[in-house]
Length: 130
Image 1 (cartoon, rainbow, N blue to C red):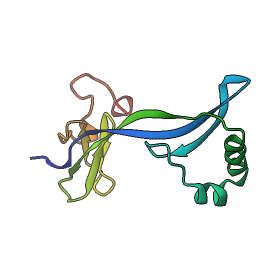
Image 2: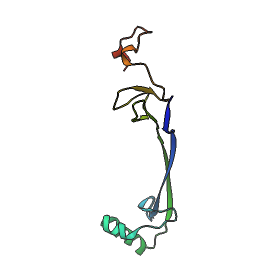
Image 3: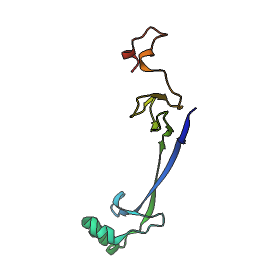
């Protein structure tokens, strides 16, 4: 019986940028990492990106209007099972192999037959199966 350590999960991520459009071209400008409210960590910006900090000061000196842009993406964390040998196996491929004992599992966590038997019923050679 398969013991799931974690189920497959879709993770949604957000990132925010405070955008100051260029007065001559509203499709270009300066953007700075910020939180969802538009707050920029100025101490970090000054320390890690001095050129960007200089741009920040310039945008404010020019009195540019700003807006917060939201970037959204997601990724899938694969499920993981406990192998018969006790190790963790992530189910992120069609065939998933335990690094310790080399047992194979499908994406549903079902243990597959040993590789020497793969293709037996179809007449394929095992090398054609992977």
